[in-house]
Figure 1 (cartoon, rainbow, N blue to C red):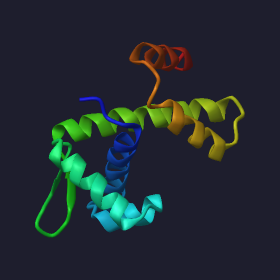
Figure 2: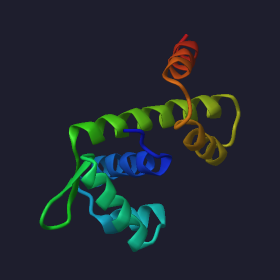
Figure 3: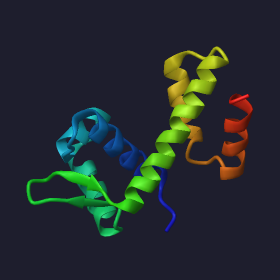
Length: 120
C-alpha cells in the first residue's frame, strides 16, 4: 500500500517522540505537530486500521514492524538531507523544511547516490 506523505510524517513523528519520551499518545502528537485533535484522531485510526500502529487501552501508541520500517526510512532520509543541506550553507530551519518535502518523493536510487556522495 502506498502511504501518503502525511502518514509517513505521522509515523516519523511517533518514532521521534517515542525515542524522546519513551511513550506516545495522540495528545503528544497534537502538541508536537500543532494539528487539531480530530485530525490526529482520524490519522491514528487509519494508521491502526492499516497495521502501522497499535493503540493500547490507555491510549499509548506504538509502531508495528511495518510502521517502524516506514518511520525509520523517513527519519533517515530527513536527517541525511537536512545535514547535507546545512553543509551546503542552507539555514537550518529551511534545510529541515526542504528535507521534509523532498524525503517523500526521492527514489531509493537517488537517495542512496546522495548518501554515497556525501560520505566520501
